[in-house]
Each structure stands twice: as structure tokens, then as C-alpha cells.
Image (cartoon, rainbow, N blue to C red; front, side):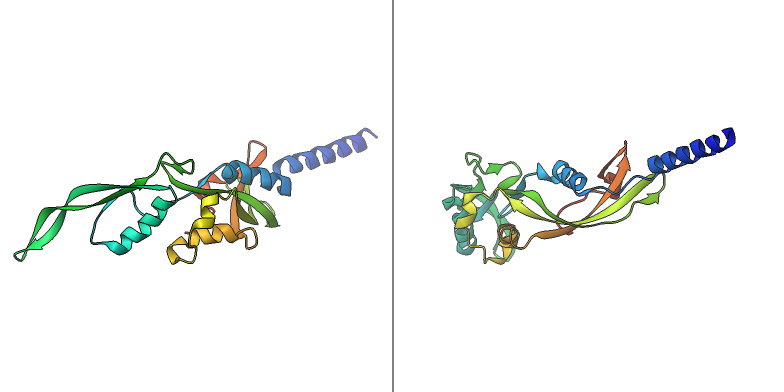
Length: 207
């Protein structure tokens, strides 16, 4: 009888150790929490051009594009003079030219040092979670999900999103109906699932 009880206790212990050493797959609630911690609080920013920039008055096409952002109150424009390289007598020389200087308008609520705010990520649907795999001394898994951009600012309705360079903004605005899709890698550490940082920086945007 004692031997039988000992065997039962050993089996229970082995099952418990196996459960502890082989974590369950992350649930949808786990994945949503991990997504929110890793990306949900990260604001999304856009730069219409490398700023600050000085351009000559003769560059009318670029001036027109940048002026559209000035009209939205997102960029500033000021008169300036700067040195520009010109060909004179067959040789390149630096001469003083008149033009405009454009920069981010930090008086706008939508502007920060990172650029112009256009929303934040929100997880949409969890499609798939792979079974945990043992790599080294840890368990890892892959999750496949979709996400969209939340908290879109009002200025986005005033931009011509048919311009090819603004595709990033157009996709953000469409993402409620056409969500982005992404595969993320998780690792089981400290008795919980979390983003696998050793995998490298995991961006929501394809590179």
C-alpha cells in the first residue's frame, strides 16, 4: 500500500514539474496585455520631410508641398538667407541666397520632437498562437495578429492622402477596415510571457 501511494505521489510530482517546465500557450488576454505594454502606449509619428530644411525661393514645387503643412499649423515657415553652392564661371562656389526655412511647429498639440502625431496602435484580432518551443533555456512562441491605428487626429482629414509619400498615413486611416497584420515572438521568462527582446527590436511595420 505504501509503495502504491509513493508511486501516486511521484506521478503527481512529475506532472506538476512537467507543467511548471512546459508553460501553456499564451491566451488571447495574455497577448493583448503584451501588445498593449509593448506597443499600445507607443505613439505614432510622421515626418513630411527631413526637418529643419532651408530651400531657395526658386523651388516652387517643394515650397507648395511644405506650405500645405504650414496651413495645417503643423510646420512653421520663415524667411531666411543661407549659403548654397552655385556654379559660377565654371566653378562651384558658395553664395548667399534668399529662401525659406521650414521646421516643426512645436506650438501645435500634435507635434513633438519625434514628428507629427497621427495615432497609436490598438490590437484587433488574434489569428494564431504557435505551441511553445524550447530554445536554449527558455520557451518561445510565435503569435499572428492584426492591429489598427486608434486616436486618429483631426488634421488627418485635411490631408490629400492620394499622394504616394503619404501612404503610411492613408493606411493608418484605413486600418479600421483593413487592419495591419503582424507576427510577433514571445518568450517565457519570470513565469510569464513577454516580448522576446533577444529576437531584436520588434517593429509593427515591416522592414
